[in-house]
Length: 116
Length: 114
Image (cartoon, rainbow over all chains, first blue to last red; front, top):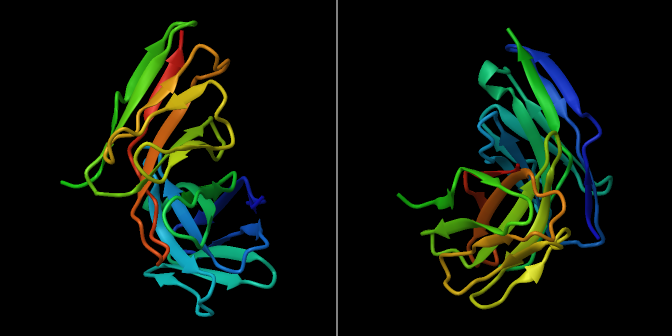
């Protein structure tokens, strides 16, 4: 079974600084997708960024980027120029690369605090 | 507007009662999911469905039941057999595509046993 591990229950960063959230996963599959979701206090799950395992290039979405190390099974999220609105719980997630019905497996989450 | 609608937002249940959480999507997505989230924890999969009239158990299906009679609807029943049902419940859906489409979530439902 696939597992996703986030080893940092809590992280904090100063506003405008950069922070990196860690995620490792375990799988025997070669085709899969990795995601970072943000969950603010409203509890709405918001997709931050997505990475396809077959792509060597790291995904980037504005201030958010990932460092995808396939051999090491590592998928960290870097948030640049942190803003107060970035404060939330962040979840790393894994999905097998099959068609409809593939389940999403989540890590335990990292609570990010942004200090003004 | 297209999206996933969960209702009710807040629900209180007496011990021994069954309750049903509604999940409706108008995105024409094929797959639908139910996740449970306990305070300070990640999401755990209860049930999922790939097509109408078919569904599979997730990691914590005991004490829950689902149905998928229509493509747009995937209600979750929390039965009296679920010993600790107080939690936040999230419904999600995903379209059928070989390109690895993203799973989208509803706004969730809070269930409290009183």
